[in-house]
Length: 488
Image (cartoon, rainbow, N blue to C red):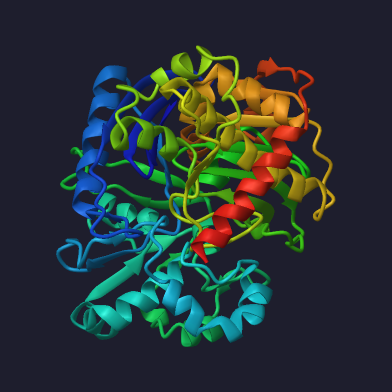
């Protein structure tokens, strides 16, 4: 028995065919364009996401050449997609989670932030979906008229892909994605009428909330590669990665290094109070079981900083070259890079912060810059771990990692050194897609229970910390303060 996992990320779609023993039998990947119409604005064309999905799945299925039992879906979260219910064509470009255009909407609603935090576990920030919807309502009246009239559906990327996969028969999301919208009540695990009214979003336009692991629907053969397959799993990418690490017990922790980085800690069936910029969020819901929760720290730019080295500056030709270039020098020679290219997340939550390079000298080279970029990624994660172990009081003994940048040995070693704790990288670093497969396979009969999944997951490589001076972290904190003052 095998599972087709679809991981619709921020820069591309990856599809894996995963066997019952956890092996990746085949892989397909297609990137799609990023659109930056103005500084701070990030958009996707939903049609391009769907095309990349079809191509990635077709490639993986052709390479595997085996029957597939079911499909699991995971996705970039918070990104808002609006589409015509009849034609399934996008009503406008998707506003991506990195987009900061709704900062003004957040300022307008700032007096309501304590209540929003109480209900959702989230701060009022442009990062989250409802603020983007508020911007669309005020700036694209023709599109919003379609929403009010019921012609246009609202969703996140998972909802849009579920609609496309099923030929429009399904308009759904799961609790992990819904909990990132600022429209979801954590305690009741459902849409909040109070928040829908506050953001002026019609509840009828929102998707149905279904479990993360259950028989959700079936693909429409005339829309999806001629296949009629059960869709049995859906979760936001970070929650799927937590599941993919088999982090099923309270206190289990992981960090995914993707376009951004996200550290999640399982808190079981308890909603842990957030603080120091940490978020309370849904982890997943298995069938009819109670919703499980997590605490999350969010870093907006990590892998995107390496892409900036490649695409923005031309310092490297390929993202993988960052490790070789950074390893060619013993350290950054005091160069500090703050990757606040789209604001800064946990623990600061400052949407107006901007990236900075501090400590440049005549002797600074591209190698020092590459090393400072890797250092900056690891420093941000240390900030989150300090918040988890400090304010939240959750012991951190080790950090499990995954995602594209986790393949960088130097980054993993730098991270272990800065944390003073072991970093564990599993054999399969694509934990996000693996988690989607596990969620689907659990409902689809590929795996019998969580214990069987944990056995399949196995271990990985351990990066042990080396003793390093603490003055680097002090200088990092000073650089972050300087960056935030500049952006204010």
